[in-house]
Amino acid sequence: MPTVCKRVYYSGQVQGVGFRYTAQGLARGYPVTGYVRNLPSGAVELVAEGEPDPVEAFLAAVARQMAGYITHTVVHEDPPSGLSAFRIRR
Image (cartoon, rainbow, N blue to C red; front, side):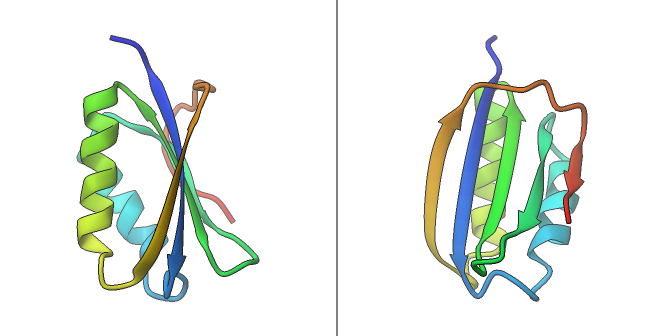
């Protein structure tokens, strides 16, 4: 199955609420790689790579877990870059 890469921007009250740590914890339950980081704009960027179904399931889990903080989500498809783990980037 082909690997996909989704770059997702979340806005709302997404910084200072444990978003990055929640995403990292959820990623452990899925065969995905990537990263999550805070942006200077106040948004959070999350990149997830893997097979399509696990990536979608992981992103759905993040959206469910953090729904009370997210007011807007923008998803981009990127070419996979072969990330080796899921990490929090500073």
